[in-house]
Image 1 (cartoon, rainbow over the protein chains, first blue to last red):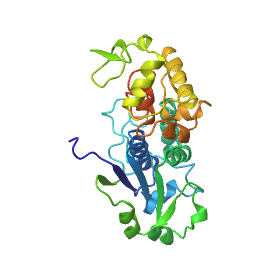
Image 2 (cartoon, rainbow over the protein chains, first blue to last red; image 1 turned 90 degrees about the vertical axis):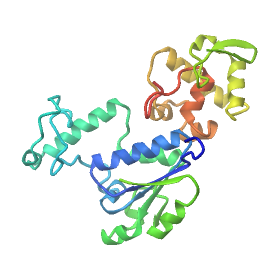
Image 3 (cartoon, rainbow over the protein chains, first blue to last red; image 1 turned 135 degrees about the vertical axis):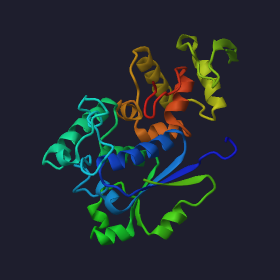
Image 4 (cartoon, rainbow over the protein chains, first blue to last red; image 1 turned 45 degrees about the vertical axis):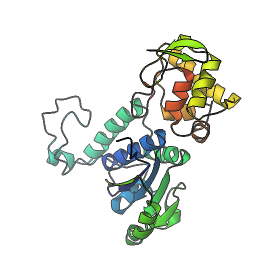
Length: 171
Length: 106
């Protein structure tokens, strides 16, 4: 195991919900804290985490999330009671679940998305946006938060990820 | 287990972290730092080390986020001062336990 240590994590973020984005941020930050290089490549709905207009108000997905249960949105009820998708569709429910999750995150001293990206950037981690997804969503570099290191094609992303000990992770 | 660091017999765990922070002194810090490829220790390092020890003594849970907000050091400086693992290495040099969680020192 020690013969081939992980030297770099290249993490692709394709989802745009709060619960879709946090794992990648935590993995990238965790890598930097272990002295492992980290880069994040945001594509498709993942771009919500970089766009200034959306990144401060990301929501937990409460619809079509069959793993969601009464304990998960921190309602304090047993995990065995499912959270009905129909309920998740009621206006305000996603916002409420998001509020509860953000509160729990704050208790664990996990920063909100913008501050988390700044933390990763300060730690030397790289933040990239996918060019194709940018074109598709009609986004420009200036629409994204200021810590974005570049807008890359898939080819450039692989080039950026090159090197022995790099692992590419799709989330 | 026991280990002799900088002429002092101290208790350490299997990864070399001091298990009793009261056995720590500056010579031990310098020796661990050298072993970890950090330093020589400067005032900037010492500020972080002293802060970590104070917080540990107070029983506070430290996170990479709280360190950056402490006013003692910025996130960037912390990474520059302790390359290869800012909290892991600074904790080891400060003679406090190894960070336990994903973002904590305990």
